Amino acid sequence: MAVSRSDLLAWLNELLQLNYTKIEQCGTGGAYCQILDSIYGDLPMARVKMNAKHEYEFVANFKVMQNVFKAKKIDKPIPIEKLVKCKMQDNLEFLQWMKRFWDSNYGGQGYDAVGRRRGAPAEPPATIAPLSTGARSASAVLGVGGRSGGKTPISGHRAGSTQPNEAMQALQAQLREMSTHMEGLEKERDFYFAKLRDIEILVQQQTETLESAGKEDDNLKEIQKILYSTEDGFEVPENAPVDEEETF
Image (tube, rainbow, N blue to C red):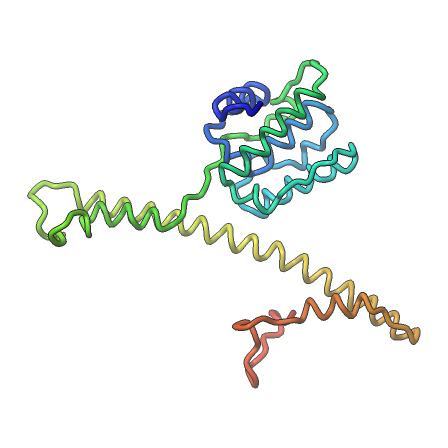
């Protein structure tokens, strides 16, 4: 029998000493990792970032969880790509499974959730709302398209109205949200680019070693083919100057 969202949140917050208010906040992966730790007591919590804010940090948490699943021979796929999007339905289904797994495997021993986190911050993660929502809010404050029959000119506000100030605050909040979101995207890009660069260097070194011995490896050639392939709209223009630092 499926457990309700409110019951799941109550159980999760009590077990892990958290203050989550939404199921989708589990998409950061930290809570899932600590549920497993409450069962086995040997999960490397130092590698789990409970206050993760960016998707690449969520993925890193789930990689820790995947390693535990493999080590404990837990036959359950983890839909990481879906869970890290912090959508309610995907995380609700997975948390319900986690609750059933915990019910079947938890030995009843005491669990010091805060101690296992070593006092690391574990405030409820903020799920990033679509930026268009902020744009709509700003439009509503400005009175643009707010009612049928035409637009209300900004200059038409009553004396003493706080409408322009509210509009400015809404726009500033949207700008801060966009800046935070962009910072996260840039960090995520750099994170995966660094990994691809390491793979490229490793493949190049191995290929050169084999070539010097008069050998070749078809798998390495396929990896290089993937690394250097392009898609429509991402080709390097002919005769375009090449930035050595950005050459992949």
